[in-house]
Image: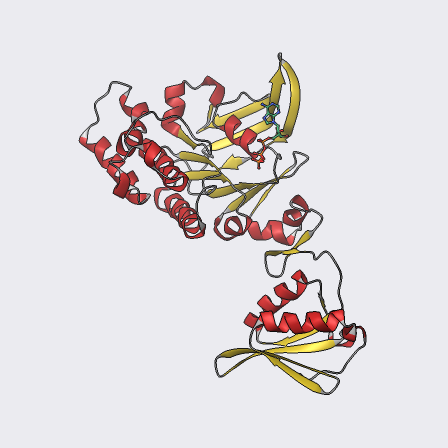
Length: 353
Ligand SMILES: Nc1ncnc2c1ncn2[C@@H]1O[C@H](COP(=O)(O)OP(=O)(O)OP(=O)(O)O)[C@@H](O)[C@H]1O
């Protein structure tokens, strides 16, 4: 494979929609991006930013409003549908009508660009289908009809078909949309493994910010104004691009922990936290949710110490000379809430560490 040339690239690409041959909506313009062999890239952005529009345009399902797309060096507009299908496979989020097809038959359709509509499958084609079923863990329902599957099972089968198509490029529009958490993680791990083992270039759009941050080699961040930022996940977090793209009232992104924090509806008193880091992480989240501010001890009305005592999670604070000890966050919050309601927390107290 030519490592000097990206598998997919764009030059001054403009994407959007036409109505009566007039541009009715320009979603993004001046896009210059590239996808390289062995790369897993996640396309992220808020609702309506243009992720599906970009995926569909890159896959040749929708014409660009301007600029060019190159697939393995050749302009996409010049490729026949079969030539394109030998290079690029697309997995869409929406349900497609597959009639009465068996799962194995649908996955075998992935071989069509290589065999032709009436082409018989060779032993090697059957092996590719089998491999694709095994890799996606869909072999167990290969004999079932597609309309008998759950949305999550169906999504894995669609990936199996793309794998059977055996293209250098795989584009997936929200492949984790219908999966539960373990399957979402598994899907991302599988895609990551595939990009490494097979040197395929994989681009997927997703709303799974956390999983994307952990697994992607590169992120394409499309904001609501059609601006695309490209880079390693960590660079985009450190430069603040990640935060800006998802900026919305009501929550913020914490660069230190890589997590989103919801803002509480009301602002409560400041508390200081100290002790076991693991416990502090979850304590902090609970306190934020309840509208408390976590801050330095000199600004706090009390200090809560979280520790593991004989393997038991314990929270402790002292107020007005009275020690309070709790063995769950629920009980700690109940106590703090009571104090808040009684306005005791409005006066600063010296508390035991
Ligand atoms: N057929 C269409 N004609 C005109 N505008 C459209 C059409 N389809 C989508 N749009 C608009 O294009 C913009 C991008 O839509 P798109 O579906 O690509 O966003 P998205 O990032 O995939 O959103 P989501 O995360 O909600 O799936 C939106 O403002 C949408 O309203």
